[in-house]
Image (cartoon, rainbow, N blue to C red; front, side, top):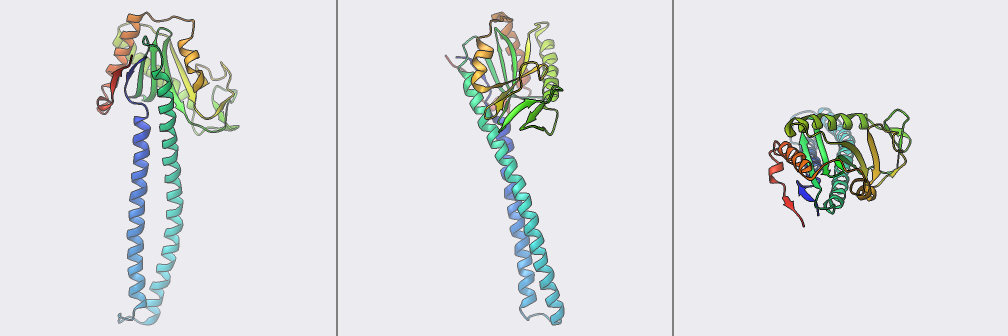
Length: 261
């Protein structure tokens, strides 16, 4: 089995937890404001004030309008936060599934999970005799295709950002850092988007330097490749360099580091 460094889904798990905390904060704020408005309503209805009836009635009307506005705003905000939290939770599931597949790779492969770098987070890095593979797990739903300009379409629609260009740039930035740490081990690097739920119709070459594959094809794509690009000592050196980058993330130290046989 592969040498595993780091824990799958740590980053997206933290983001899901943050989204849950944000929801709780908004709920508490909503309850506090409703309690205040409820107090105002009671004070306006109960004839304990020296103010005239028309003024108390005006306060009640304003309070009711405030409640209606607050309810509409809170409903929209809770829907947004719930969607964000569910997206991060699905991302955690996707990364965990991919991490489980990578853990079953042969013992001459190294798998680094959830690596935070100055260029951005990397879900998985696989280093072995066939090269270095930088993976981003995508738990998208629907059909993934190419737009003819090297970027992706999801269900025929453009994505919110240049997914391919940004990830390839992230990989190249990390590659340069690792190259400096390894003092010249010039490894082959390949960027991969790994889809766990979507149907992939983006053919080879349609997304430039990045390939799109389904999770069940990972083993064949990486392990069973006939291209042997790294000697065992070179693979170990590159893995140590990535591990050095990982240890710059203080939270990474708390993640499990293990070798399975």
